[in-house]
Length: 290
Image 1 (tube, rainbow, N blue to C red):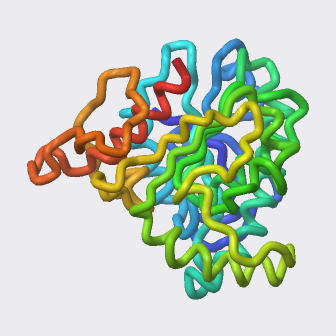
Image 2: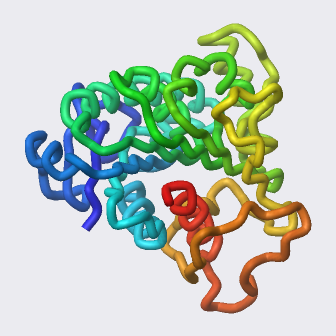
């Protein structure tokens, strides 16, 4: 059973709810008081998906991924559902979903401030545009966070030192998982980001995505210099971090930061290895919570 915080107004479409709510397996309502009791005294890990994911796909992916995210028994996994669904053409729609990500981050911060401050610690992990949701949530927290882990961040590579410097400063440690094989961030992100910057921020217009090359230098002191730059030979694409119906294999913890020439950890051609990349990313995140 996976506990979720839902920030969506509906199962499909990119509209945020007026307030957050908690659910078991995304289907059974959990009261705010029950949620507060469950997280009290626990190391809580909030994990969210990215852009162009509807509610059911978000529930399925995060539930499956949580089974491979072998966090310590003291930790509690909480999936976060936000309305990142594409309403029009994905690349063109991206900047507007950035606004929804910001709105949802504020909703999450309000919910955590009201119901999770009795937790032992708070950590956050994200995929793709979900990075903006989690950074916005950090910005609004009344307390600090233990960890922030950003996978395939569809956000500017200097965001931790510029736009979200205040939010990033609230995390004791920040880790970034990035891949140069991410075609979405290589092609779609710059195009959508250009539109978004013109419409919403104005400057700069051509930043590289955090999820391709890792964070821009100089690094804030709490950002690990050992960025988890996934080897090019692993062919790690944007959709590989979270499962889409398949997840296989298990990786012993701790998972080491791979070097540029580290071999693929499993035989990609073996049928049993389908979905190994999502299992690896889950293990990489779990390693940071040890």
